[in-house]
Length: 113
Length: 113
Image (cartoon, rainbow over all chains, first blue to last red; front, side, top):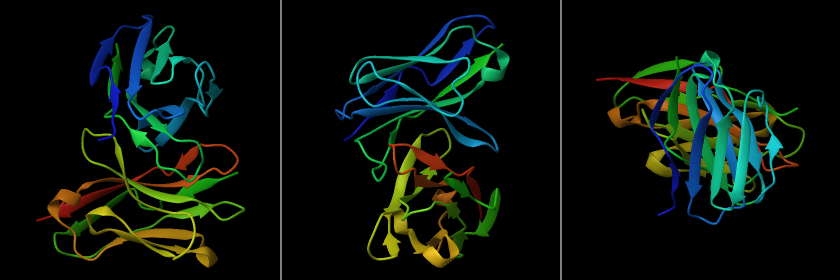
């Protein structure tokens, strides 16, 4: 059974803290993605990665960075968390190509106080 | 630029009734089209996808969707809904030159007993 796991289901942090969200996939997928999901806005792409050590900005990269040191792991970093980063964060992975399915993790609900 | 529109933010149907969720896309070439479902507290799961061939696509959980190029639509249907179908549904289009998927803002389905 294919699996994308995220390190936390719920996370509460304070303004200004550095936050790490971890995502691991066991499908040997080349592509990995980070989205944030907000009511009424759907899914918005933050960053994605085609391969180890490669990253591309998505639609809303401001305030975020990413790291992909190993093929199976893709980390999202909030350098200095702010209240407007309170959201649901979803990680996904896929094989190469825009016709292929993305597999999603269960999400991390982050609250920044 | 590619885009996806889901005109209905909320839809309420009675259990056992038929369902149609609307999706319109904007894309210059033949699109890759997807429907995903997100149950409460979960990540997204693929229901079905279209990338060529028969324009009526069958998916999991008894769902189907029909690609209509003339209307730029990819509507999702189910003949008889069950209470467990209550969820949020996302239409998406493959973005072509890269491996990104563009998601609509979602339609939340409510089921009346």
